Amino acid sequence: MKTGMMTIALGGIGLAAFAGCAEPTAEPAPAAAPESPDGEPPAGNPDMVARVDLEPGHAVNFYEPSPGSLVVVETMSPGQKFVLTADAISDAVRAYSQLRPKDELPQALRAAYDRARSAESVPTTAPASGAGGGRPASAQPTAGTPGEIQQSLTSSPDPANFVDNDGGCDWGPRFSTCRVAWGGGFFAFANPATSGLCIVDHYAGNGVVIQVTSGSTISSVFQAVGTIAQYSLGAAGPNVLRRIDVTNAAGDAFHVGCRFGV
Image (cartoon, rainbow, N blue to C red):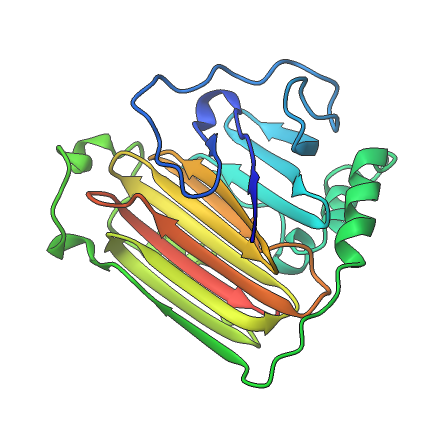
């Protein structure tokens, strides 16, 4: 199985990269990504094929951790609003065109998109979907005092903002699931599915590792506490296994919701 690595270093957003199932270290968070023209990836990050900075703490990044695997991640700070709808974030070209309607699509993004769209569907005789892992945040051991790390009332154990404003528990035609005030880990999958979207509001703890599986490729991203992110589970189109795993979550608390076939 292929394993990709994505690097997210967006100033104060606090996402960093991990390959495979690697655990985050205790080293300081990476510095902000080098400045580059809007739409172009920063130097030194070969997995990023395009990026769009929307406002401080809010950006959309396009990654190709391995050929044929294209992942779109929109990350924001508490109190901000997602700009990409489910169908837009599942289609990288549509997402970029929505964000920058007057700009030409970056060549690197077009090439990655074409490779992802040409990926073959994987036939299956026993379609399946499911979710599990972890436990209510109040029932798991805590690491330190995670409640003191909350950065805003909009990112908190109260799931109202996650459900009502972020769409965290919205319905999906293939399969949908969500957990609120959760911890210790989580997974959700549909096999096969033509698209997938998951939202993670990580409101307390030390950071979690998000693993995105699309077909035979696994990409891992570290999501810092106090951030809210929505992840496309690969490029829409091919009918393949699509899955998310929230790992490295001992002592962390988060809301998470996924929908497939969006």
